[in-house]
Image 1: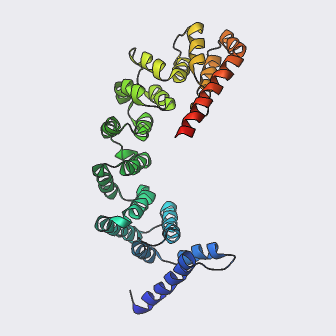
Image 2: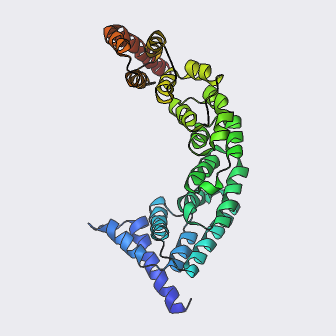
Image 3: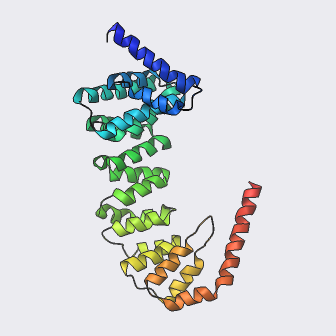
Amino acid sequence: MTSAESSNLHGIVERIRGIAVDGLSHPDAGSLLHAYIACLSIPDLCRTIGETCAAPSKLRLALRRRLERLLRDGNLVQRDREHVHDLIERSRATGRENPSVRPHVEALLSAVFEYLQFPQQQSIIETWIDRGTRGAAARWLKATAQVPALFDETAVMAYFRSSDDERAAKRLANQASPGFLTEILPELSDRCEQGWVVSKAAMRAQTVGAAVWPIIRSKHPATYLYLCARLRRSISEAEALELVLTCPNSIMNETRGLAIWAVGQMQMTKVLDEVVTRGEELQNKDLEAFNVFSGQNQVG
C-alpha cells in the first residue's frame, strides 16, 4: 500500500469512526455510516475489521455486515477471497492471544462461516468442538446446519448425551440419517423436553420401534397423539380422550391444542364432543396450573 493509499484509507476509517463511535449529529448518520463503509475495498475492509476487534459494537457490526453482504452476493474474485481467508486467520490468532476480544472474534467467525472455504470451516469446527463450552457448541451446531457436509451425527449425539443441550437434539432430528434416528429415538424421546423435536425425529426415522411408543406416550402425550395421526397408529377413543385431558394448555406448556388437532385428524368426533363437554373442567385445571406457576415466580 502506498503512502497516498494509506492516507486515503485512514481518512475513510476516521470518518467511519466519527459516526459509529463519536456520534454524528446528522439526520442521515446511519446511511452515511454504511455509505462510507461501502467506499472501502475488500482488502481495506478486511484490514479495518482486523484492526477494530476491540472497538465498540456499533462499529464492529457495521463493518461485519458489509463483509457478510459482499460474501453473500458471491461476486468476490479469488484475491478478495484470500484477503477474507487471511482476515479470519488473523482474527483467530488475536482471539487466542487476547481473551477479552475472543467473543467478538467468535461472532465474526459465526457470521461469515458459511462463506468460507471448506478446509478453513473444518478447522474452525474442530476448534469449537475442542473448546467444549455451550457457546462454542451453539456455533458448531449452527455451522453444521449451514454446511451439512460438516454434520457428524455421532459427535452431535455424544455432545447431547453429555450436555442434554436441546439444540443438539434439534440438529439430530433435522439432519441425522433415518437409520441413526431409529437407533437413538428411544434416548431422544426420554431425554428431550421438546415434543416437536421428538416428533420430527420420529417422522424422519426409518421406523418407530415398539419400545419407543410407551416412552413418547409417557413423556410427550400430545406428540404421541400427533404421531398416531401422522403414522396411522391405531388408538382407542378412550385412550385418546385420556391423553387430551392430560395435556396442559397454559403459557408454560401449551400442548392440548396439538392433541385436539390430532384427534380431529383421526376423525374422533365423540372425543371432540367430550372435550367440549369438559370445557369448565379443563379451564379450572389450566387456571390452577397458572396459579401454581405464578406463585413459584413470586417466591423466586
